[in-house]
Length: 317
Image (cartoon, rainbow, N blue to C red; front, side):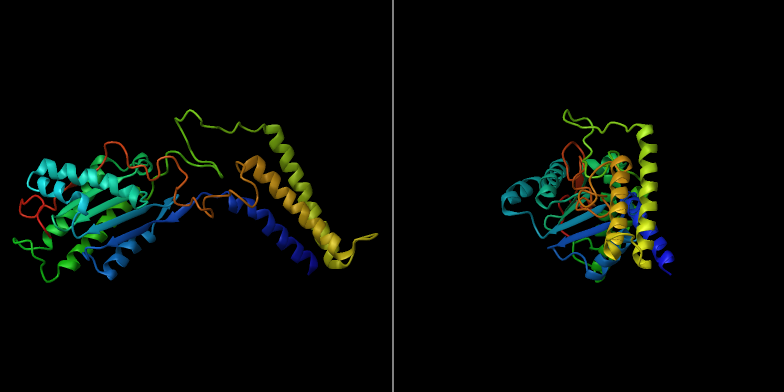
């Protein structure tokens, strides 16, 4: 029994580095701040499930924020722009670019205003680099605009099932995001504890390790693994030679395993240490907060405009 237990512990301990270095695939997340009360909670949950049931490289977030009306500092600008399609589109695009960083958004951000009616969509740099294009932003805008258009009558008043129609539009938007991004990879993939910073002057790249050192490291890991087995067998069988006894044998074996894990991680895991700065699958950067371009909504991207209600730019819904 002691030999079997020792073997199980050895396999478990040597598996830790492999688990810590595995690729980070995480479920998508939907965040909705619905101040305008445009969606129902079951509808939000349904859309969130669509994203949550899908794994994305480094995770992915879709954030939707609704406003009953523009904030005080934008009301005059909105009033002046709502009757002109080009001005209203520019207003919504500027607003979504300003609002996304204020909400700490990352991934894809959707802003919806009820009075006057407007929708704007924008993706951060990281999401655009993984393949979400201008045309995709425009299509996502169109999915939501179509739902909001269908939820009101010609006088821009809610139909009896308006909330259900908007819920369906939100779910369709989530399904579109999944379809476009579920199999994509981040362009700048982080290694352990390091933020990708391609194209920046201060970028630091880790030199490739020597193959000879790699083979040497594997040999040392093998010897230390054998040390662990011997130490654990001696510990559980009551052996230990002259002095030391159970605890000495046990901790000697565990020390060997820890040393082997450290060497494995140092040569093959990209650095980061055993207990800090590890894999993104377990760290605080799991949603790409440390990646270059996450949460960067600058540039010329962004789709926006009215909800398309009867040709009334800025029409309420």
